[in-house]
Length: 104
Image (tube, rainbow, N blue to C red):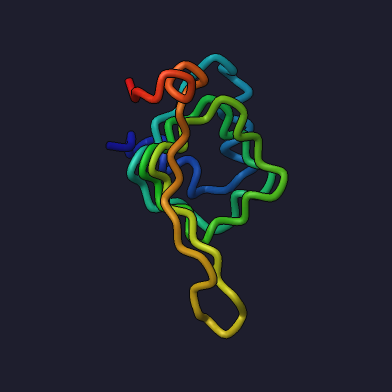
């Protein structure tokens, strides 16, 4: 479950979020299972826990997702007519899991 404080700061805006992250670059935000805001362009989401996060409306252009956990994150693509073009939940596995075929 997401940390409510982390979600609230992100909802204040990308500039506030990035300034907060710059204060402690080793901090690991917990945004798991959160319904995240639409404007995340340029957000520093590196190393963030985005497990099962709802990102269906999010603009992630230029966002730093390096090392972020996107296991079962909900990402939808929509076309202008409002129909769903693709609807998928993404799950990434480590290289060891891909090699062995066993999930850890």
